[in-house]
Image 1 (tube, helix red, strand yellow):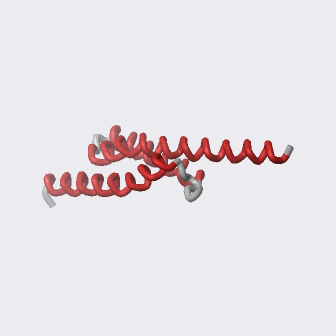
Image 2: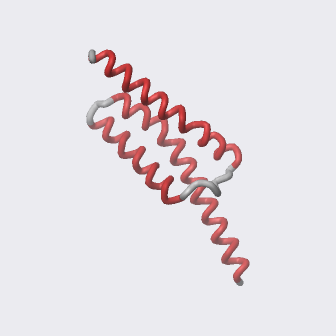
Image 3: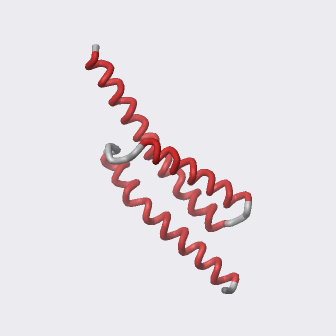
Length: 98
């Protein structure tokens, strides 16, 4: 495979995986509905995206870096919404228990 074909494969795959993530992200950001999302999974996923981004930067693997640079802010925003929802639920449970 030529270098150009490898680059095309990398950027094409990065585009597809990044694009596949955004419909769910947009839904969560519009509705604030996070009940169907696992906090642990999203925390691990967000850390993985951050790690892959750093890996791409350090290795000058631009498809990996760019895809994760685009994806990380959205994963962090969803993680933030999930954490806020969990905190709100735990506060409500605490208040109802008193």
